[in-house]
Length: 278
Image 1 (cartoon, rainbow, N blue to C red):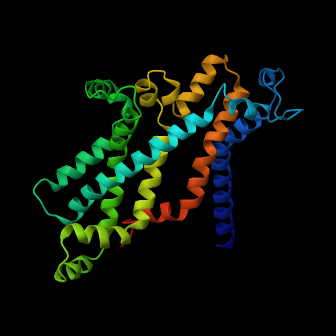
Image 2 (image 1 turned 90 degrees about the vertical axis):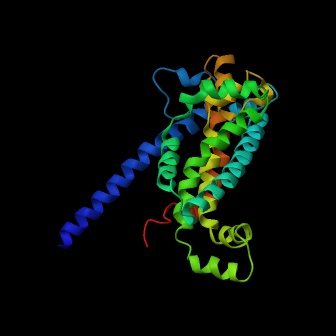
Image 3 (image 1 turned 90 degrees about the horizontal axis):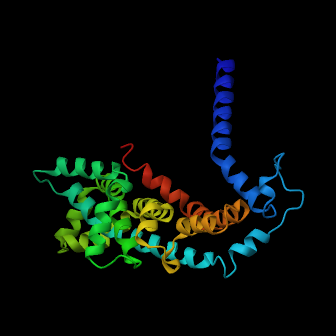
């Protein structure tokens, strides 16, 4: 029995190590490439670690020629506004689904799930046509508005699962004191639902941060509208695949995401596990 338990523990540790290598290996390689002198990443035989590590690639991508600071600012703006918009709309939708009993409630839940399963690239053409008709193409709102829509399905499902766990007696007590539905939602339900809000918000932020195809399409190649993924692609086109510079830009773009994930990791876990057990 003890031997079997040790074998199971060893197997679990081995699986965790393999998953960690598979997940973190590319990031480690990108970090190593970013400190290689430009051009040395193509050397044969392959250099697994540079003989003369340098931070020159970081200086280049932070210079006026690359101006990755502008792309970082655009990505932060787009991701933050899209996150707030998604939480605002999905919060109302989730509360209605969780608390009201109406005829098409189950169908609405299925439609929300189906919407979350549709890859954004499938609807990129009609989305572009609608944005052009609204006169938004070539503006930052052409990137923000669709990202709000992309984040609503997942956020709605997470918040619905959490709202259903909140005892109805708390809301009924507030209503007996004269509070209306809107006041109950803003002053009681939302404060209680902070873990779910944090979890949904972080996921919406990360989804908008890494979105590429739509941002690439509606930005029309304008440097002032480039988000980080689009900017990194433009570096490869302009400088013929200088992977040390691309890797440096990638590392810089990852730092805000890592800080966000580390800072809010506990809230994300609590929000994702809401509704898993009673």
